[in-house]
Image (cartoon, rainbow over all chains, first blue to last red):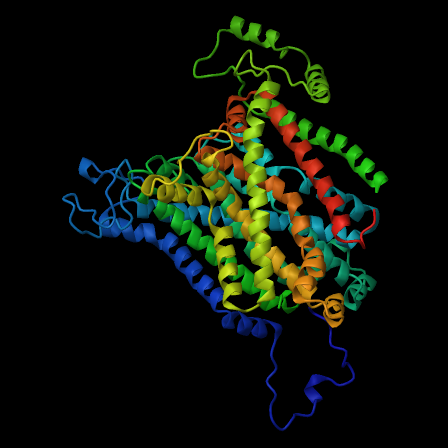
Length: 324
Length: 305
């Protein structure tokens, strides 16, 4: 929190230097130190980095190395449903398809990496959408207060008790399926629009506790307009908890997206996400189980890591919220 | 208390109105119709269909009719399955979804509270770390991965349990219920643990210990009641989650529940069926939230309505 220093009488430049230099420690440094001590969070961070890097450059590397892209269908029928790790046409060991191929002969690793790209993108962008809505609503309610606050927070309470998944399903079933890109944009908006409620509550609480402090009073006294106070003075100070909550929103949005894609309402072919890959894989589960296990396990590990990272960040940045 | 319940019951009406109107509006705004298929219908046939279903009337007449249907609890006939009323579809699918959901939630409560309490009592022990890691796994594992994996192991490899299908209240339910409840077990275990940890450090627990109660009495009689508050407040939103969970689980295990009908109704633009399911689910969620608030007052005597 940016509380202005109260030692105005002694300007820092003239302050007497202590004999032994005391190195100060900032909130950020403290947090990083605590985060690094949390082994699970570090593990989560490393895995998330690997998954992000792999889905960014992986498809390119695979194309260079084996000539496969996510939608390349080979002409050789013996490569259909190839089993990992024995994936050469004659059944001998080969690194061609580390995750095998699907029932069209497409390389599953390439598809999982593309799915990762899409799933992560949906997670991040939808979370960003929910951030914007949540911060706007929460900051307005908290800053204006009174009747407006009452009305907005009542509205949020009402929205909490709506089975929003049904609304998302209705939305996607009716307006989806036109084009692959349009579907993605629809997903971003729909998922962002249903996951901002808690964010709004958090921001509102923060703003309410900040707005009575001196620096806001000073800003108001010098005639700064309300919109500018909210944007420049209040919102930056709420970012700590907001970032923590956003890290935890990403995996939950990714999970929602994968549900929708699993049901055939999310990402449309030829694109793929982990949910739609699992839906494809489930068709052949009895005979070719790797077609489900490979994308499913990748997704589970990624979400696991994201959750650990988010938990660790929360503990590191917000020591009061640590339990035990 | 009675006034509070009455007020909350009255609030259900406008909220139901909002949800139903929103859904109806979406159906109207969306392109396409329940009769529009691959081929374009001849104009005369289309006109007849529109007349038969009253689609030629002005929008406020149709809206009013939908509202009065909802108010009477009679949603009319399905458009895609002619001759079948929405109410009969609800009556046949609801038991499936409800059995699944209730069993899964009860199982989650039993396992989650036990694991969470043990973890809190033995904080930083092996049991604590193990159950919290398992809980994190449960939260991160999508149920469409967990379900098929269970099927693969228990049904297709070891032949212990049937893989799918609905057969009433039988062994067929074990795998779907396990799949559905995993996430809730995990959430409830985490919530119980943090709630209990906070309560165990409070003064009234120290008092209880000081007056010489056994550890068992301290936990069962005093700590649990306060420590479970987060679990109680989680139960409200949990029902909304449970609905989306059942949709997926019904798809995996080929169960004839509400979820599958709901998806198909949406894809078919089957207006009465969509409105019927949405209205029904909303009422269920709203009632359940009310129940949770009442339970809250029971668990925490400081709360007065």
